[in-house]
Length: 358
Image 1 (cartoon, helix red, strand yellow):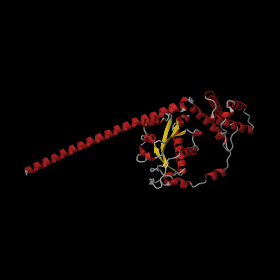
Image 2 (cartoon, helix red, strand yellow):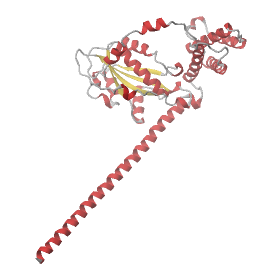
Image 3 (tube, one colour):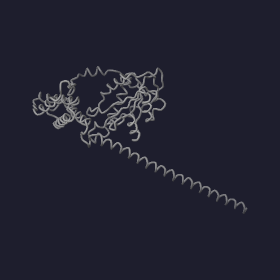
Image 4 (spheres, helix red, strand yellow):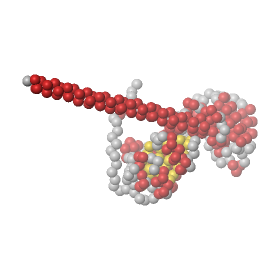
């Protein structure tokens, strides 16, 4: 009986000791796990700060928010912003006579600076045409601005006949019938028929189709019509593979695409702190227009995400010659569509999940 009790005590003690060892090990592992998670979060936060600092530096360096109009591109952006403000005013149902005096003053000053530094070019001519339309509107409503007329005339005199290349600028009268008739098509079917293509035919995509799609995408709305976007096209197998090596979402099909496009938005087109994220908005809208334009021409596309850390962004720019001022929006794989292929179903949310009625 004594032996049995001793054995029982021994077993209990052994179990307690074993349990303590296990609990100690689990507790130790738990501490290690929590520590590793904590360290991982610190690293992620530091990396996030570095990446935001990269974006901050590029915005400060390339936009005119703090540097002023120290490049031709920045001056063009300011001119476009101001002349388009006048165009929008003239396009109202009942424009106020003499509206936008501060805008007119800034625009004239910008144009004088453009003439002094670079000469009046196409952007300058469009702005002058807009100023002329503004002057004519005021004149027709009894307001004579002789000072503005003299400044317009002086700036126009710098333009030789051979350089006067555009009559754009101002407003265009158009009818509802013209708009509606040109827009009549089954867009619901068009939108539904577009898929992300990951199987491409080997047929070459003629550059004329890319040019046509880009021309169509140029109608994409942009902040104050500044049109900050540009499209880089890569056609050779070597160039495509090199570009795609920086993007992880194309594995298994990217090399089949006949063309790789890169859509960018140039920070030199943005003029204020409030526009710090505008490149992504304008660029995203432009990229979508381009994708639909390519779809309308019978080409297959797959949007390739460019959410990367700053070192990858820098590396791709160095490889391709994309300017530091240009924010990369996305890559687009383009090619002809094979006769038969599989596509992801990509189920969409129901309308009542995304449409919020207020």
